[in-house]
Image (cartoon, rainbow, N blue to C red; front, top):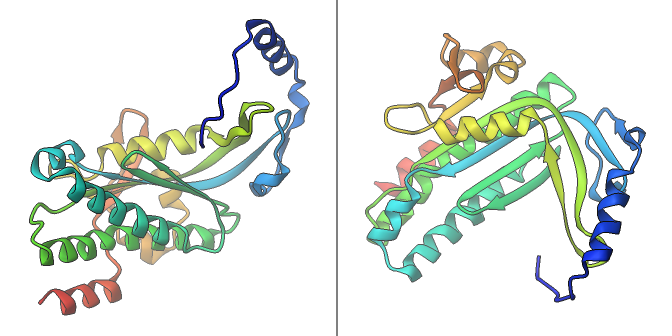
Length: 245
């Protein structure tokens, strides 16, 4: 959010710190689904099970040595524009965020069918890589983008945080589901790794067909277990084949 200058007062800072630390734990409610933002205040919070997707560009630092800043701006705008469009396409989406060259989203997934729909969003995002690279190549930008996608399911705490009274605040999602999905995305797509890494809890809740699209062995990494794959959206992939011939 935009900054809006206010003088800092350490005495008021101490009062705000004490106000936050003295809040009772009972104001953090267990709910079936993460609520809308307008239900949050600076004194409450909500626990719920949900799913998260993180998408990173691999070796984004290498792009800075290849392209001029105006071209880089176009590339990043393309990636962020269309990745947000894909991640926002599920009805149960709760939040979409942009952090640097990473786009991530949180979804309410109370039913197993919702888990499968999140997986559909993820492999659509993976196929978007081909569409973007096709259009970049048409413009003469030959260095292709490479994505890493991480997906997981678990419990998150949703809170509002910021400088009270300044209008500078945001919604924060805390918990293993967010951390795991972020770490999975960080490792996916590197070297010979599959571009999609799926947390084992999420994978276990997929239907049989979707489970079959992922590795049948469960792998271990520094923060948990996962399965992986290079799953694509077949209809979208056929479209890309047609326009890129």
